[in-house]
Length: 222
Image (cartoon, rainbow, N blue to C red):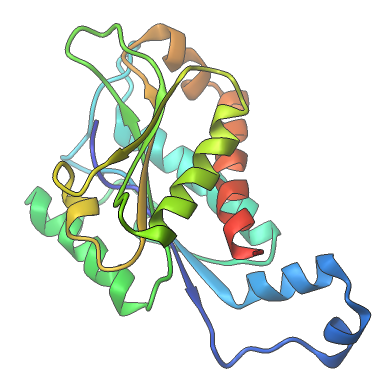
């Protein structure tokens, strides 16, 4: 389990629906308008010397996180959402893990983010665990709604079991020191071949990315 990958959302209060959007009552148009008022900040977990965990076939988590994150961003952009990435290559702000994570957290606050979603892959000491899970501040209504929406979409793929939503405030820097509502998503255990094959495959990554994006859009469109 490792921390970084974030998706963050903030609203442009100066943006407004057109008269035609309001008077026609067209749901799709209204949703598109809401999306255009939002920016999603996507932070793929880890990077550079912070490789994260290892997959069953030797691939680094940092590269898998980045691949999925870019696909999430593409889905959101296609829905009219403005997307900002913390990284689009194999890089870090700082080689000191806590400083690097805090930079991402501070950046989310700097851009007035509404949501921060961190994208990761998991691993266990024995290599036998499976499942998708999300960490969030379970006392924060907005964070819980976001995590619940994303988990519902991921659970619907049925590629692995669900480990549910876990209070990460005392476990993970990204959640415990968050300055905006946050959900950190672990898409599965890549050291286990059962989860890993799906997560590393192109078809699986596209499905996972769409599920995460749909979970975010569900909340944006409320």
